[in-house]
Each structure stands twice: as structure tokens, then as C-alpha cells.
Image 1 (cartoon, protein in one colour):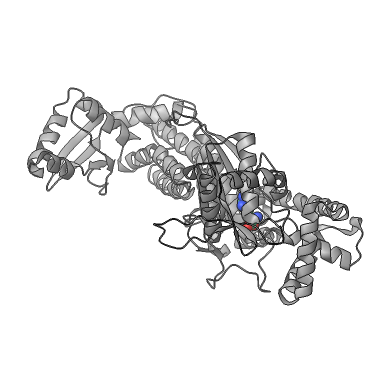
Image 2: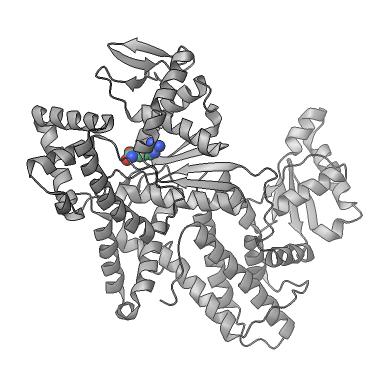
Length: 561
Ligand code: ARG
């Protein structure tokens, strides 16, 4: 944020349009500009001459002292900028006094639909669903912080083949409706799904049931409703545990009634063509580097597919919310599906392509580098995973046994989520529970621990709100204040890239500096009362920011640890 303020001032004062960035050499200066080369090229002059000239003009500014301590030209073409302590403190004060840390809010408020979790009804939730839920909820919170409107939709897979498979089993096992509970679903779905792989007759039967369900078969619909009730309440429990809150619990089935209208739209635009009995939309473009196959809209047997319901859902969302952006958080492997859907939506005028975004994420791997599985070779149910992490954390230290269940759950969440979000979302990562649950290193518990410690220091010193002086007392102190001022930059990085990872990274660096600060600066023993109150002021602001970032990363703070 400071760099933007400085850029603006230099522009207003007629010095020019200089991009100012964080310094590569913080030991020498706070900010730098590398634009001298560019400007000298434009002017056809030597960088030396241009750079010196710009530097001189900055130094001659009448309000130079208000912002700068030192601005130097460094050969062959850099400007090194050190800002004034007083300026830093004024900005720190603005941050602390403003509810949203003086972050510049966007001029135009927009509407974002965030589509995440996307659990498939009747299938047990596993570790893969954790990523979409964590990333999606965090992205939604970041968007909301910037005063945009978010509409969070879980978009359950509630009408697909897995339902036909479970209904097949219910009929086969002659179960009554009351017999259908989560235990039964957890047992029967993997079983029939495996059976379908080897047995064509069963596979055909399950497809037939699915199609008849979608066409409105009463008996199947009754069973479907019960399956939905049982499964969705389990999904809700897990989402609650992970702190994900949805405005809508819509599913694929809710989009079904929009299919005829979408189909008509595609026909009217002459986009739907026949291909081997099926109806498809050609979405490839001449300059495609990779071939993009046609979107399959309707199978030859009349059944609609995943892509068709996503198109229908776009129409539904357009009518219900008329959003400016729709973000889909799923596994990267669905990239082609979304490319096809987005291109079709653009072609038929539903939504311009750049308003639709697929936020793909990488795979969660086990220690062997392969997709995370339990010892028995299965992808663990989320609930079991939560318990396993809890046990590992408890076993780390005797005192951990005394923590309340509520606090333990918060710590488990921090282990899971920080372990996840410290990776850029598109990266695969190794789910190392042992490492993620340490209280040292780049982990959730370390961040929580820092927060609780700094909170205690502030309380023990009876901090009351005060006015910050114009002083900064040492380098550690200055580094911490500068890091605090970076909050806005990282928030915007996370927002613009739809990637909470930037904030996860930032909060770790902030915590390192906070720890360093109170280990080296003994606040309790200070006799200079102004210094003491200044330091507590800075720590209080650091604490507030850690708390805010944790909230954006969907991590709650335990009462103790
Ligand atoms: N149910 C899908 C799956 O498990 C994810 C749904 C994502 N959202 C969407 N609108 N397609 O793969």
C-alpha cells in the first residue's frame, strides 16, 4: 500500500509514472523502482542521466521529509527508497483505527457466486472434498472482506449414477426406507460401484434406474429423497466442522428444470449438432494449442450429462442472481469440462467467458507421494481423518490431553487448513500430519500459538488504547511495522489470484517477526512509558491482523493450547 501512495505522489508532483515495488534488498532500502531503464529508453537518453535526474527531483520535493528518509540512484538504473519513520507510523495508526485496516475497497461492488464442496450425495466424504471446501470457503471470505457480495452454493452431485447404484442395492437387499442410514450408504456405495466395474448387467441396470429417476419414477424419487436426507445431513456435519457456510444447498437436480430452456437456446443459436446419435456443441477454436473435444449435451438414449446440468445451472444462476463472476472450486482434473462449459456459455450468450473461472486445485498425497489413503488402502472418510489428527496432536505433549474438545477441534482445523493453504492451490502436496501438527515450523498450531502468546503479553502489560508516537526504536521494531503495512498487498494478491495461499504465507512471516519482536524486546521491563505503549500498540495491531487473516483462512482460535 505504501508503494502505491508513493507512486501516486510522484505522479502528482510531475516526476513521472514510476512503479514502486518492495525492495529485493531490505537491508539497504524499503522500496525500489526499476523503471529508470524503461523511461530512459523512451526518452532516448542514458539511464545514468535519467536516473540521477529523477532522483534529484524527488530529493527537491517540498514535502520530501513527510514521506522519505532517503532516495538514491544506484547504477546502472535503480532507485532505492527508504521511507520516513513518521510516515510509517501515520499509516500504522490509520490501519489500527480503521475497521478493515485501511484496506482500499474496490470502487465497484460485484456479485460472486462461489461453487465449492460439490460433494456427491451417497458417497462418503473423503480427503479430496476437504480441499474444495477449505479453498472455496477461504476464497469466499476474502471476496467478502473486500465488500463484494458472495453467494455460496454447495452444488451437490445429487442426481448422478451413484444414486442409481444405491437404489439398485436397496432394491436388491430388499431394504425398507427406514433402513437407509449413513452406515448403510457408506457400506453399499463402494460395493456396488466396484461391482459395476466388472458386471455389465449391473452397470446397465444402475444407468436405467438413474435415467428413470430423472424422468420422475415415483418409487425411485421416494428412495432418492431419503438418500438425500441421510447423506446431506452427514455432509452438513462435516461442512460445519470445517467452518464452511453455504447460502444455498442446491444440487444438480435443482438445475434439471432449466434443461429444456437451455436446449432451446442452443438450438436457436444453431449450436447443437448431431454426432453419432448424440447432441454435441463444437467448442474448439482455430488457435487452440490442444484439441478441445465437443461438449456432450445429450446422449443417444436421451440422457443428459454433467456438462448439460452445469449449463442449466448457469441459466438458473443468471435468473436467480445475475452474478458478475462465477467461481468453481474443483480438482484440476476437471479443467477440460469447465473449458467446454464456459465456451458453450459464451457462444450461446449466457455468460461471457471471462466471468466464469475454474479454480482447480492439486491432489492431496500421502507420504508415498500417491493420493492420500489410509493403511487399508482406502481414501479415509473425513470424520476418521479428523479423529486421527486429534490423536496425533494429543500424543505430542502430555498437556494436550487437558485441552477441551472444542479447543482440540479448532486446533485440528488449523492443522488441516494451514497444512493445505500454505500450498498454492494448484500444487499437489504431501499430507504430513506429524509435521502439520507441530507447534514449531510453518504450521497452523505455530500461528495459533503465536497469537495466544502475543495476546498474553498484551494482557499482562495491561495495554489500553493509546496514541502512537512518531518514533521507531530499532530494526526489529521497524521490520515488524513494515510487515504489518504489507497486509493490503497480500490480501489483494490472494483476491486477484483467487488463492488464499498468499495470506497463509504472509501470516507466517508476520508471526516470525512477532515472535522475534517480543523475544528480543523486553516490554515488561521498559521504564520509558511512551516506548512501552508504542510497542504494545504495534503488537496489538499485529495480533488483530493475525486474527483477521486466520478468519480469512477459516481457522478459529482456541482459548488456550
Ligand atoms: N460433484 C462434482 C464432483 O464431485 C463437483 C461439482 C462442482 N461444481 C459444478 N458446478 N460442477 O466432481
